[in-house]
Length: 109
Image (cartoon, rainbow, N blue to C red):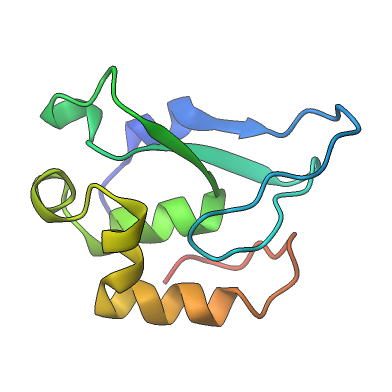
């Protein structure tokens, strides 16, 4: 298994600010304050996306993206939330995980 150093750098625990939980744009589940969350660079940092838009995701959703797609594929064809959701394998995963509780921490497929 290849190490994803950028995932380690971008994983945080949501802060408790008493506001509504953010929603993962891929699985449409809330991201509770006590669950790991990740910032996903829509254009990977290694492909020039250091200062580009990021989206807040469940950590499991983020890990699955990087297990399924190479960074070159992300930069070239899957640099929007809509494109990620339309990917056949990722779309099935996001549909499946959307039926799990917001704090679900199962393994990425």
